[in-house]
Image (cartoon, rainbow, N blue to C red):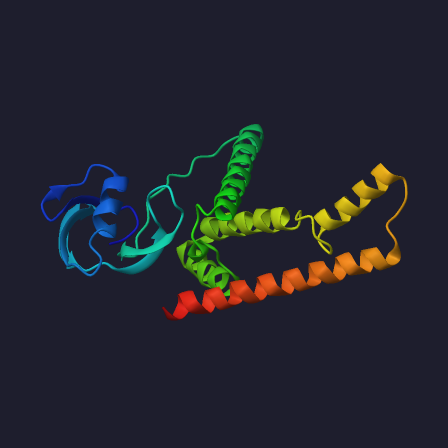
Length: 212
């Protein structure tokens, strides 16, 4: 199956939308299925067995589950837009990404998201490799998404992050004087240990998800 293929049916069930097709594949992990599709004017068929892939779970709680996958993705048609339209679409996408990240953090803190949904350097590397294989546009989108994540993470009110320095400036503005050197050093040490503990926990979680 190559770029531009159109799926006709799965196990004699007609496929009308990509979302329907995706659900058929996700629900058939390890189960052979008969597929028909058109390619360059020809109608082709094959028996394909979906392999395991991590994907977001459906439902209220955010989690990562194993679903079936056959290594294809939805086709997007590229259309040229003006510079103004690009700015509008880019701004909307940026706002949507920030909103989604903040919503995830809120669910994670409240217990509405599983710890398996958190990824560290190993998962980031695996996903980056996938994006490289999928194409330049996917890679740039992933880099942008990752950069927004880092920007939000950098706003945590803990020294040495920028958010922690903002808290120091805020305290100075309210009280009219700087915190003592000892207090600043103590905040820095606490923030450093929190950062190291968080990195270690995420790294161990990555290893656990890799070997499970």
